[in-house]
Amino acid sequence: MSLPERKGHGPFGLLTRIHDWQSQTTAFRGRPGSGMKTDLMRGDLPVIFLHSPKTAGISLSRLLGVERLSHSWARNRLSERHWLQSYSVTIVRHPFERFLSGYYDHILKPNRNGLVKMYGWDIKNITAHDYLDVLAANPKYGGSQLFWTDYPSKVKPRADLVLRFEKIKNWKDVLLTAGIDVSSRDLSHRNKSERGTSNHLERLGLSADGFKQLERDVQAFFAADYKAFGYE
Image (tube, rainbow, N blue to C red; front, side, top):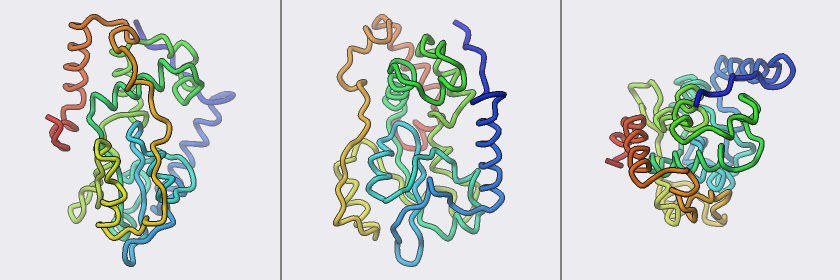
């Protein structure tokens, strides 16, 4: 099916324009916003968090003391000076598992989210293959994880610490080893997707062959992620 027509947020797209203006203003200043700032330091460097969707980022943001939810990219928000003068932390996840989690949350879950605001409720009727087209047009909802891990800098092209979703039980130890003191804080996995306990073929309306084809298509779409983070 074709995708629903994209709508603006709010009357006459006012909220969309406000958000665009806020992004441009923050990028001009070049400093981390409240969606990146944590209350932690690593030596004399402030710790910032880059929240890639569907990687248990809400759990980590709580651990790091981030004020609000944001999926901003450092390349859009930070000057290179601020990028180099901070200690950046982010998370990656197996691309197919992340894709499924996003589809379950954004499309199959009957909640009003950013995509509903953008496209209307018809977005809830798209297929998993259609969802790839949505991500291609709106990567901030779950595009390549390289948008969150990488920055166009020859000095530091990638975030200082890239955690793996699959090792969430070890995150605190990894952070402590990296010199970030979270010893007195609790880490709990929040906002878990139903994906882990669902019958995918039934929920996605796919045959076994169709599911395998979806996996191949997702792997092709996220080929750079599979290669960059060793998920091949």
